[in-house]
Length: 269
Length: 174
Image 1 (cartoon, each protein chain N blue to C red):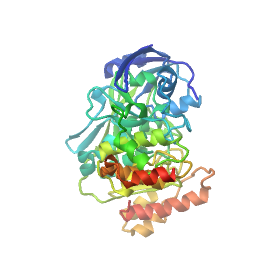
Image 2 (image 1 turned 30 degrees about the vertical axis):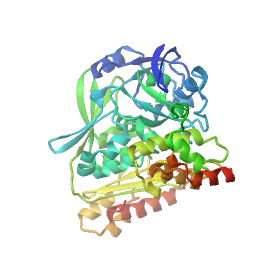
Image 3 (image 1 turned 90 degrees about the horizontal axis):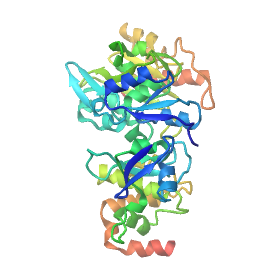
Image 4 (image 1 turned 180 degrees about the vertical axis):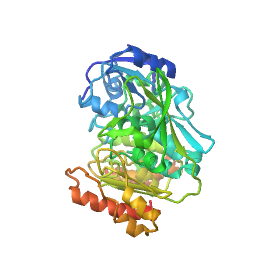
């Protein structure tokens, strides 16, 4: 399968990429690892007129501690995040989620910023970011803004990114030693979650239980009110309207959400 | 557009369309047919090659060349299975696949070997479970995984380089 023709330009810096986004056609797309975009282009589900390559901008790659936050460059590959000693110590839930994306070759190319911008509700990193209460730094011609995970995912494969904006970094709270759980139910080794659940600090996020990653707020409230993990998990699917597909119908997804939330609240991975 | 890529140690400069996938560049422009197009959807791993950026050490990391644009490989070093053997000697992973009969029809083999080379570069002494997880991005539709895993473990402990009895057994069963 071969993508439709497009023009290609390699950005020389982050400001250059923003300038290009502002001056090129509205359907210009950023390319980092390309592991969400290129499959869509090969299927002709996406046909941008021009790609702006930011995948080799070293200023977008790397992981550093900044105060009480861990800051991950948007073009940092999943493999780098998954094996980072700093991330594994300070944000093990995030490192673990990166280690479950696809397979090794995919993790060598796919990036955290790309995964978040793609906003697949079944994906690992959006759920992890939401569970951790993280945020993304977004740069546009008007400057930088920071968007909380709750406000970032707005719909099925949709985010609050405006045309002309790019994600420069991802921020999560540093929580060394905090207990966490991560559950991903799949039928094939390297698949997307049929349902996922991640829990840390009384926060619970679900994958593939709606058009965006979701907080299991009723279960969180029950926990805050002193319920046990098992009691709170019974409320995990409350208010959700998950989709149906060949893998699971709505009721089965709700069942999975309850079971996986209980396991996540028992800090199992 | 013009791209400069080092393929199997040889510097090249080629005029390519931006939409040309790396696997098609390797097969049709470079004439290197080891990387196969299997699923063409980033799943099967038959197109796996190694890519190494200018600042990177080692032999590079494994990537699925059906999901990389040739223009993304500009300035990088790409290694295919054709580039592994040196001076007529099989790479230890290739020798181990031969010794342990780590193939059946052979279609997945170049990608499997390249993924294994990448895996061993990151984890030189993997457990069997780590080999299986490390190769989860490569499918063998003959389901010949058992010998493939054995071959990677043999390459890791250096058994393949010494030309042991395993080699004879492999040739008999082949």
